[in-house]
Every structure is written in structure tokens, then in C-alpha cells.
Image (tube, one colour):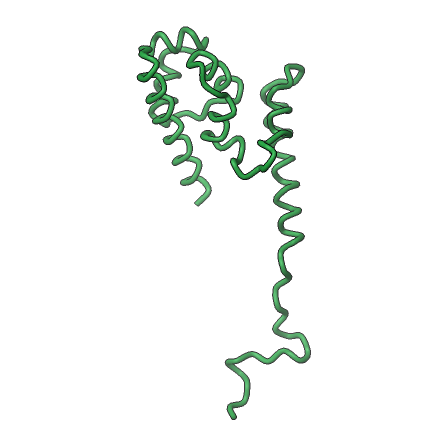
Length: 142
């Protein structure tokens, strides 16, 4: 299920990038050159075969003159539901003192903390063995 969602996200990102590139009247080769990536790599991103790093997305956004944050959302790096605009994620992604691997590690840890906090606030499941609980299937009929 998760792998399918990632594949759909990457495919949608590729479609979006291709659309933005054609609207900007840039060839694949021109955009690759301006973004500092190889022509085959950019082609694979557009076809949904590769998920680019945040740094590559930032370079592509700059070349296309579009918002890097929008690309991060489309790539699944940021969530549009973050309220404040994903300020923690944006701070990590914008930190030039971190490597791409360090940035991704921090984002993964942050996301796991958020998921853990959501799980802690979820209502507890009903314990069917708890005294006083009557299961409808085993309750005596009236």
C-alpha cells in the first residue's frame, strides 16, 4: 500500500514537472542543463522512475522559476496539512550545513515523532475481556 502511494506520488511529480517544463518552453536538455542534472536522470524523474532528492527538486524549481515548497509537497517530502507550511521541514531542507542524507534522516525522525504523537492521542481500543463489557455476539438474548 505504501509503495503504491510512493509510486503514484513520484509519477504525479513527474507529470507536473513535465507540464511546468513545457509551459516554460524548455526542452528536457535545457532544463537538465539549467538544473545541473543529467538529461537521462531528468527524463527518469519526469517518467516517474526516480524520486529526486530535496536538493535536486530545489535546483529544478529554481530553473523553472517555481516554488520549491510546491515541489516538496508534490514529492511527498512536505505535507500540505502541516498548518504552518511545514516550517520544521523547510528549515531542515534549507540548512546548507547538512548533507542530503542528514536532511532526510532528520525528516524521517521528525515524521516518526509526529506519527507516534498521533498514535498516543488516538482512543484506546476496547478490551473485550474487561469486566462489564458485553459482546453483542455472546450476550444472552432477551
